[in-house]
Amino acid sequence: MNTAWFKRRGWFYQPVSWQGVAMVAAALLFCAQVFLAVDRRSHSVSDTLYGVFPFFVCSFLLLDWIAARTSRE
Image (cartoon, rainbow, N blue to C red):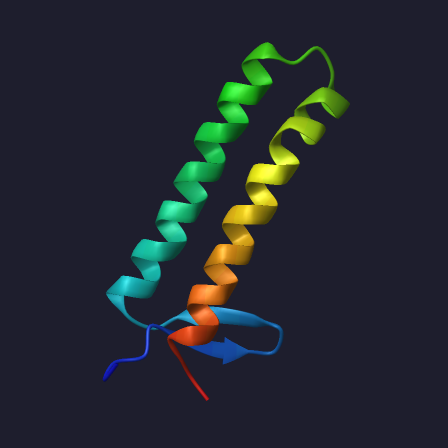
């Protein structure tokens, strides 16, 4: 790949191209949709947290993996 999508900043990655911004936006929109769907049917805060945790972890791990593969060193 010629263009880097992300740049490493400490423990995190900062998007530096439109592709990186699109990836972060997609992950955040997915997490917001999951949160609203789970929260609609949950009875307590802990139900919501237990419901969204697997989706949030998987989406942010995938985003971190993509950022690591498309970043500048």
